[in-house]
Image 1 (tube, rainbow, N blue to C red):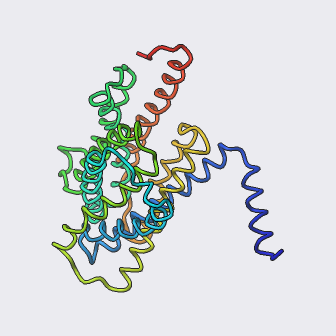
Image 2: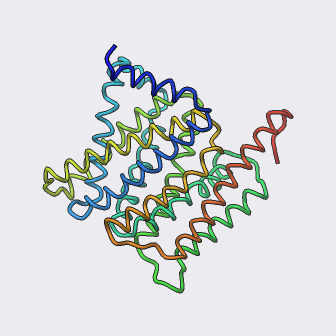
Length: 311
């Protein structure tokens, strides 16, 4: 047997011997690093290209990964009775993506990452409003704490409110609505169908806006965007595998590493040093979202054990 095959099989065996929680943590760490590199690349390429054009190439390279899977399934992945809801999710996602990419071109990486932690806070609000989930006092206390952390980062009244941070918050809110739509779709459609339509609609919906502001693309930027798409795919696959390996609450604390990576990348490549308020506010927002995740898991477990709905 070739030495490479022996090495690969040894690594696979070593990986399989690790506890599921450890495998999940490692994959989550890989995901945070890949997301952070992707965001840094968006910041880099956006110096030469409009963010919406960068978003189009991100979606194009993402769809290129999905096409072989769609063909291999003989289009079974596309079987759905809720095409309208998939399209709605695509609209929400592309608007959120363009807003987020625009924010990355305007705002320091660490601040964008810190404000992106508001997404679970918005998700908790949307779940009560649109999914009919129960009102729980701890959820609302955590929501208020999360928005207090946002105010610490933004410091309205002390510093001028800039466009970039507001775009991040808007993007997080739209992403939360998209997650509600995903929950609705998951009742009838498989995860592979949801992912397939996401790739298709994101690519289709980003073509028109990208052509409207199209700028010539250098080979260097094309290479950076190919790497951007690769990092995005690695991040998504690693995140999915992390959540598959173990309970989400075991790996979610490591999502805060995104702020560490983006702070390092921002300092090294863009001379951006996050201030103390960004770190404090991010810690408050992230802790609030993490608290919601832990309590939701605990409430769900109690509900399953008792057969009742937690209040």
